[in-house]
Length: 250
Picture (cartoon, rainbow, N blue to C red):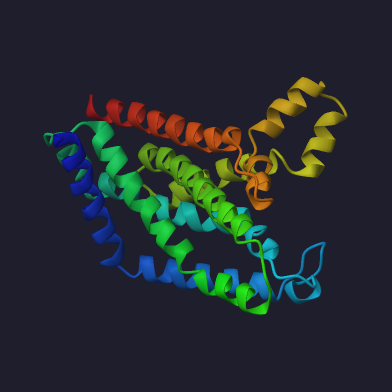
């Protein structure tokens, strides 16, 4: 029970810290503006939202991996880098809490914040339901996949934030790592690898891509393998963060 209480305390502390600064409001406004603009005004290979001839949020979810590429590292870059910069990391690690409790509390606070930003896009769901009769089950799966993908990006940002006291360095490195996870399943990359690598290597690289696993959510398919992929990436990244912080404690 003490562990759960400690995690709740840290989560509340971190959430309060977000809304005590302009960062939370700037992030939410930018995210909502990007979602609205790209959903209705920017077309894909299928055309723009109004050219589809059907009520769906395909154009909404297709841009999420690219939005998160820059916005999520901006949220995660301060998690541990700020603690190291102001010198409170040592104080936090000497408190009667474990490293895992601190990591879980900070991660959950940021993940809940991302969930709030995602939930505020509900007017788009209302709009498509007003314009037609969309498959709300597909939309729900898309939201679940989007939140899991945001958590995976955030967990990677936790690693880079724990590695350095500079938020800028943390942001740049996390963008590069997330870009690799994004491009690993991109068609041109797969075609390039197919020219010289074995099919096993190509499949292994594609399996590491967030796009490969997010596409099923966009189609309304809630596959346990995709859920396990994102959760495994989150757990592995948080474990790596714990190893880095244990080195700081020593």
